[in-house]
Length: 251
Image 1 (cartoon, rainbow, N blue to C red):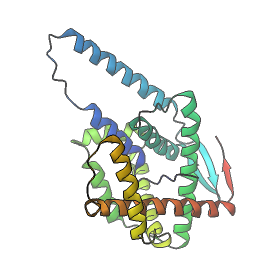
Image 2 (image 1 turned 180 degrees about the horizontal axis):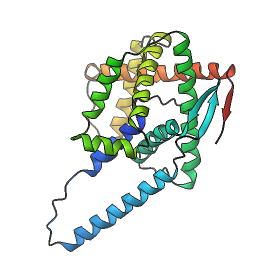
Image 3 (image 1 turned 120 degrees about the vertical axis):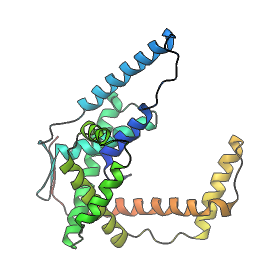
Image 4 (image 1 turned 135 degrees about the horizontal axis):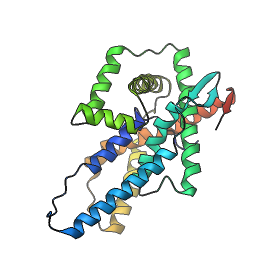
């Protein structure tokens, strides 16, 4: 598995990003028919794309996979699916194309299986999440929306209900605890930071960009390298867990 995706409340946040891009009010003159026509066409395209995205979802109660006797349901699948679809769209890719459809499906399954294995390990080691922590994170999610109605609408579009969202939040917090304690990224050396900065500077020169001094970007480079290292360790850890796991994919 080259890339693990354990983003908290993934499906909902993908919809947040889409909603943020679609809430801008048009400043076009009402008498200008051409911009209105273009806006209508764009709206139709967005609606058609939304239908294609929703068509990739599966029945919420359907068993997607069984991992060591733990069932993964369609409701779980649809949440991760929405996130992956959203990320692909941000990168200018069409997640509904024939070529991408199988990739999206496999990536969603990989993410769910890996997440389930890690959660099982977290439960074995008695990692816990309090109701207060869940509520705090839920409130943070809701703050991304202007109104409660917008939040509920986004939740519906993401293919989740409130119970599923709260479960994902709890799982995400538990995973964070487990990863931080059991799979630390380790220290980043000055040499690694310097090498990364040199690559960044070289790329900047070819595009004519102004390159900031190393001291100015060192914290960001260090954080990026830590995340990269932790993702690599996480992927390796999941592959080890898979060796002794019973995994039955149903779709």
